[in-house]
Length: 122
Image (cartoon, rainbow, N blue to C red; front, side, top):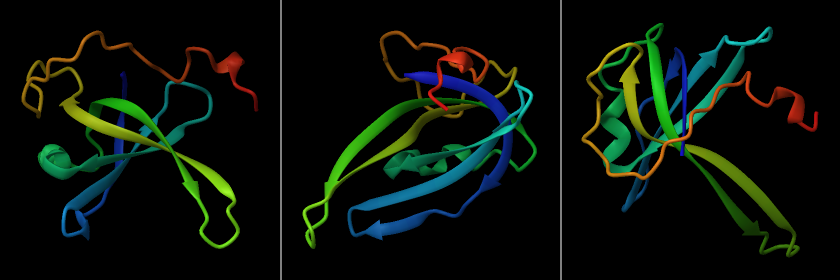
């Protein structure tokens, strides 16, 4: 579980992927380092409305989980791996009020792009 603060750059409409699954994507810009990072997140199911009260240009704090999955191509049996950042809570930066119901999560680890930059393999 991580969190990051940035400026809301893109707020997409909700997508109905299947009868039982819906998602909504948004992008924030993290300007805490020399090179701004544009980071894409997704909201799923009942969390899709969490970003409704935010507008492009707002400074927001996003609480998210890192998700990974494996996919096997039915055509050639090639394995591929995908990652996603799944947001579960959004707050306007500096606001004490959050835009989601309280979730009893254990410990939330703080994340910022400036931490561990030298550890990146690229």
